[in-house]
Image 1 (cartoon, rainbow, N blue to C red):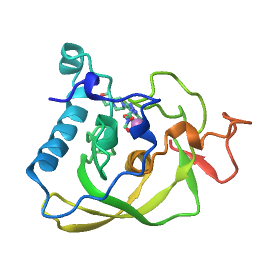
Image 2: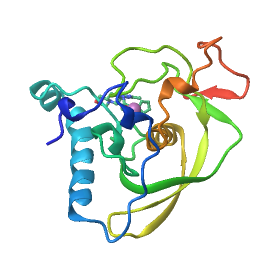
Image 3: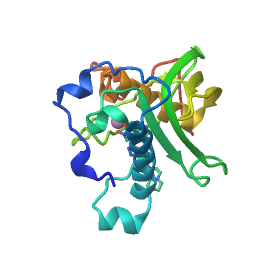
Length: 185
Ligand SMILES: Cc1nc(NNC(=O)[C@H](CC2CCCC2)CN(O)CO)c(F)c(N2CCN3CCOC[C@@H]3C2)n1
Ligand code: NI
């Protein structure tokens, strides 16, 4: 199982690399790793398991965070967290194919399992995205996301491009709410 010791931290070069696309058919190792990543996110949201294995809570994780510079991510939002609908995905080669002009942000800013410090500030992201990704069988999917899932998936795709959340905070005015950004409420 993945635990915090497997997660690389700010300063590790892999976090700043552009990850490689995966090719299909997927090798078994990548399939297993992706499952382990989803399991980690779910475990991190379980109070007992998080306590037992000292896991920082998370709603998503990207392969580069466990030092695998490949383009795949895992996201898990429970139905309580996501307007009554569970959002559980493993995405290979995820790509934003279009997005709204309007932006959104989490009111409390963002954190990252690979960043062991708090960085205050608004992280503006597209309010709605149309993404394309492949599942572990190589099936192509297209999905429109908004609100919480859209924010989480953008945070994870950023990791595949070597981008960290604080790169998107306005250094001159971190807490200012830009005109075109609506806070997620
Ligand atoms: C928003 C939030 N971010 C948490 N952590 N950071 C992360 O997930 C990083 C990724 C998120 C940071 C902002 C967008 C994506 C991980 N990362 O760096 C991946 O690249 C949380 F833990 C959290 N929640 C709310 C839901 N709750 C359910 C019950 O269990 C506790 C859990 C806490 N919400
Ligand atoms: Ni992160």
